[in-house]
Image 1: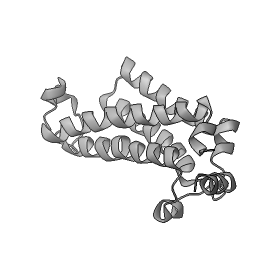
Image 2: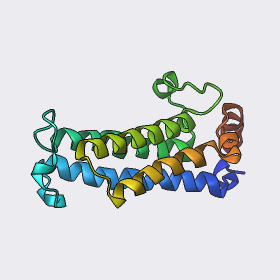
Image 3: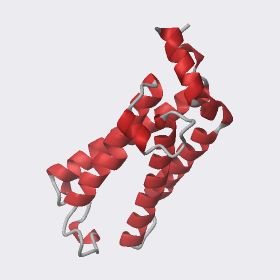
Image 4: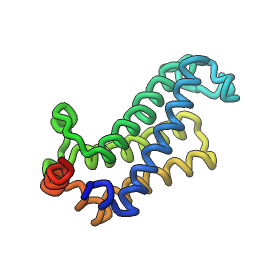
Length: 164
C-alpha cells in the first residue's frame, strides 16, 4: 500500500495551504522583481515609507524566495517525504521529518512578514488579516495530532520501505 493513500484530510489540507501560499507568492514576488515600482500590481510607489527599500525589488525577492519557493519546496517534501540532508540540519524537531518542521518555520515567517509589512505601512488591510489567518492555519494544521504523527521519522521510514 502506498503512503499517499494513508494520508488524512488534514495532511492534504496542509499541503494545499502551502501550495496556495507558494503559488500566490511566486506570482506576486516575480511581478515585483520584474517591475519594482509595483505598478503591475497597482501598488503606489509612495507607500514604501522605509529608506531601506527605495522600491519593491528587495521585498519582491524576499516574497518570491521565502513565501513562494520555500513553501513549494515544503509542499513537495510533505507530499514525497523524501529525505534531504541539508534541510534536516536545520530541523530542530529531530524526531519529525524535515518538511513538518519547515511547515512550522514557514508559518512563523509568514506571520512575521505580515506584521513587519503592517508596521512599515502603518495600516492593516483585509489582505493582511487573511495572510495572518493563513499563517495561523498552517501552524494549527501542522501541529494537529494526526499530521504530527504522519511525519514522525519512524513512520515515514516505514512507509517508504512499504512503497519500495
